[in-house]
Length: 270
Length: 270
Image 1 (cartoon, rainbow over the protein chains, first blue to last red):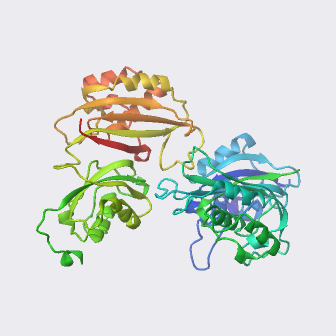
Image 2: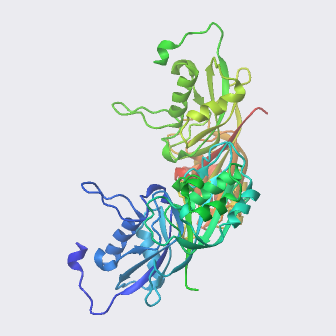
């Protein structure tokens, strides 16, 4: 086994930063999960770790593989960031390709680089963007069914939704948009931007993009669910202000399903 | 069971024509299959028939559900055509919606109509179009992996491919482009058009579209495989003429995998 053939090196290992894309449909989220008495669940972290352990001949405990964002089951990523520590015999310019050749077809390393000194992929995040895709047509989203939420019966008013989206921008207590049991003491976050977009390349789709310093559990899915209630006329755009002022989850819309959500990018530094 | 509650009507049943779209990824093709001693395989015909039998309270043998094209396992359709016979209590303008509400998410009725008198969805086909999608980039087609063939290592020359594609147009013996065991005595078909296209909406993709009076077994996948050999420089465009003249399968390119293929439309009448 790899653990037995591993020889500790006298030099400290190098920290690497990976940018990852994955189709979340067939994963139980990012985080490794091994329910007692069962097979481990298929996760992004688990698949990536298995490849790195073999490719770099480094045991799991030394790799210390971490992801910046613990995406839920079914949630996609274009720009997840991960870090690990290893003595890597592969030149950095070939590392992404070497990992990709061993990964399953529903995930891909977009870039591999040596991390800046002291890099912490979770603690040093300054900004991240998510996109939530709503398919707003009567007929089923046959080809996009794992990438969108199907909202039918109402034509969404994108102008009203943007009026609401703008009210999210700023530094607020965002607890009214978090699932119960989010487990965070500090519920103040800064939203840098939020837009509701249509794109002719994706007919019938309405996309919510949101950038912020951080997000509480299910927060983007609840914000998207609230904006849909605005778009179909059940809420006024000013409902956003009421939710931010009251921090009352019951005033917000439903938590939309995971498959519409995609983590687009994560930024570090000023 | 439905067979027991069915009461034969004195009037002859009406023939209906359906236009169907499906994502072929999770189907064992169009045609119903029930291997001895096993569960029936999941097929498009099987799923549709199960819905029609219950919705219309008509037994399988009376429905006589037929599809115009027996698409293979993994092959997609935007415009498959099917027919069935029934005494349908549902107004025709509501029939597509009623069927769709009961179908799984990877297939959809696009239209339902009363068929013209004497309609035969197989025998009366005059023209049909297929599209074969090639993903021509080094990185993996993460989001399109079930809809394209991944061709890497060569940048395809679309101009050369179109030169070859034009040579297919006309009435020929097309047996050189058919899989062994195609089982057809008549191997003359008319190709009305064949194009190699790029579309900015699908970056990195090269699409082969082909229209004809009919196609032999695996014919579109072999034609696409031959055009790729032209596009990467292994064949000259004139190889098409040689294959048509000789009817020799060994002169053509490989059969590409099913997931890149989509049946786009089927036309009836002049």
